[in-house]
Image (cartoon, rainbow over all chains, first blue to last red):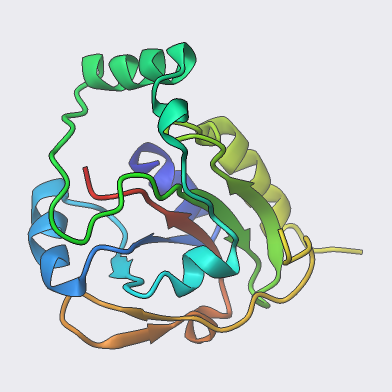
Length: 134
Length: 41
């Protein structure tokens, strides 16, 4: 998603990453990843619950397509880390676009740990999100 | 999902790395992509 952040900004769309990781651990992550957008903590999972983001069953991690996508991510440079205390490796994520009035315009709750919308889809939806209606 | 497309998302309060709070409603005025991530791995 970092790759399309400049294009999102050009569309006047901001980005905010949300994690359940405690805020005290965010600083080192921000420095290490050099994220171009802010990351904040949702320690009580309120946002995850609001958007009804589920938890993956163990079997989902063992599905061949999910293993394959994890391998592709690793070949692409992603390095998995061991979870630390408080991490919930089964918690799923999701991508949501809100318009300037705070209304939900696009929702993609992940169906498995590797399920994400494509960058092209995010940019397309971002374009719709900022387009004046009627 | 309970929140229908086109519906207003309720306010949420997040915590920045420095410990300060950030509410979702304070970000109104610009569209925003919220990316809920899995564990930071």
